[in-house]
Image (cartoon, rainbow, N blue to C red; front, side):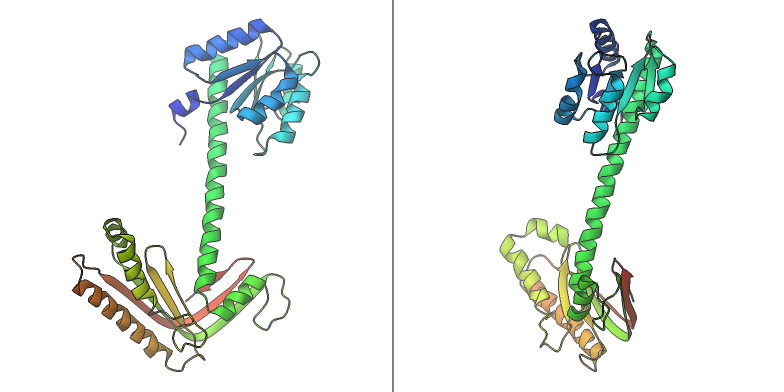
Length: 301
């Protein structure tokens, strides 16, 4: 959420060819607590100043010599990468208000200035602008996390199926419009999680930490010639997973259970010569599986 302090720290640019108006607006805003206020009486400088400072709000007079406010807004639309032009227009002519809104202005204040109206519209505009920027940042984080999840999923999938999903081909190797799918009547999936691993990692040196992880991950072979799980990887805090596909071995469920016992023995050996006693959670699931998606990957078990 946007706080009052955030709004008062918002970067404001005042653009007006009349010095008296600039001084009046500046004083009004400073008296209200706004502490980042810039100004110019030259409309040709607005785009360059915005590129350098990325103002949260531009108070823009419409009637100015050389370049009017409408042309300034047109230029701002060309450089505002977020798609949101934070302009509050200043006008003495009511006929200009509708045109200004159509040109990209988000709101307007009238001349002569009404103190309460100016402060309210400035506050609201800054709040909307900051919420807009927060939404963009949240969207970027979501996209980034989705990419991480996709990479982790491809890392855990059996090699052959991961390559199919990466290449956008169906399992038969034929061209496909982004649709990939494959099913298995039965698979065995093993998950292993070190309980409170983060707490342990904070007090362990790098050598001990890597030794523990290596000891566990080594029990999840990944080579094609190995008769164990086709894929095994660490995710996050030493979270391990292995998938036994039918066809690679007949007794895939037994092998998955053997891997679970290997992991438990590895933890017991570590606990035998360590002051810190690790705990291991094991999950083993057996059932039908389907992997597929359209331009994205999904996995259901």
